[in-house]
Amino acid sequence: MIEVAEILRQYGPSYREQFGSRMLPSHQRAMQDIEQCRTEALGGHVYYCPDCDQIRYSYHSCQNRHCPKCQHDAAQQWLARQQELLLPVPYFLLTFTLPEALRSLAHSHQQLIYTLLFRTSAAATQELAQDPRFVGGQIGLVGVLQTWTRDLLYHPHVHYVVPGGGLSADGTHWRRARNHFLVHVKPLSRLFRAKFRDALRLTPLFHEVPSGVWAQEWVVHCQPVGDGVAALKYLAPYIFRIAISNRRILRLAHGQVTFVYQDAHHDKRKTCTISAEEFLRRFLQHVLPKGFVKVRYYGLFSPGHRRRLQQARQCLGAPSPLPRNAADLPFGEVLHPPVVRCPTCGKGMQWVQTLPPKSRSPPKGASALP
Image (tube, rainbow, N blue to C red; front, side, top):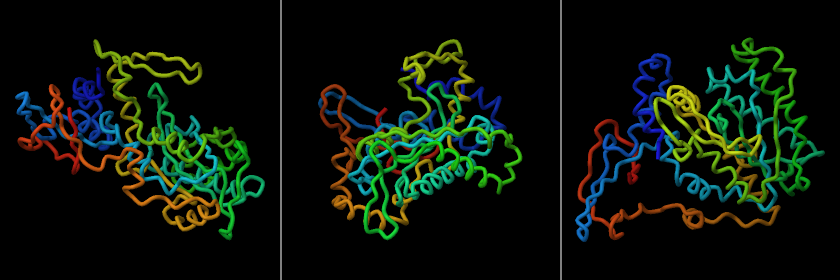
């Protein structure tokens, strides 16, 4: 199987030579981490099977959030920590898309524009939901930023999971949303546009935006996604998915990368062949700024409103979430490191020695089999 790491090892040096002076530090670090992931560069451990006389090397993983090999169990672990957000009501998925005319600006000023995209879309949703014609109460939102299309093009948007209802202002009862309906998306998109415009007006970037963008309709979608468990499971892949997984890469030959993607408009699998340089450019434009938080909580789900969330739970007659550890286990969170087993006989192998890293040290506890 062709991996992103292999493409980076082969074509990363020439890419750095050509564009290194203009590359962001976060892009440089992502390239280095993915290239070194699960190799001797990060060190690891040596194990031995006395029955088969087999030796196996377990190299550390890089734990970079953009690495295709380091996100395997993360979604399940995140789900295990979301018990408090489960309410016995229908949930909805809201999607806010940044207009095409703003994408160049977003690409050049990611930290600011992504933050405004989060804040204004969440504020617009909460304001409209307070209207008695819709919900008439305080709602909760869990949002995640995604920046790519399936063929790796730049397309910043935010997904929110929202319960179908909200808590009354006095905290005494739960106001249910109507079945299969949360808010009207047309007024929501216009309110989102106005709030984004007003927020951007306070920055030096406002005059770089074409005036026509404030007159066009902005895209907002809303769809029901089932109960709380189903909604969080729906959202989890968006949180830990990266721009492209290794299994989608079909070929690397003659400086060309071929990968497969699902065409959303025609619901068909298609292939895309581009140069390795273009592949790296597309991949790296989805690397987030260092320290940027891509998952955010608002309203009832924000850390400062968990008391209100407990009031909502009481109004709905919902049980309190299970204590940590007990709640985690059904979702498959690994509480102990797995036993390294012999590839020949399947028995547990004995630890022999630790291999020191040859470059930087990986994050604490970041160990994975090659």
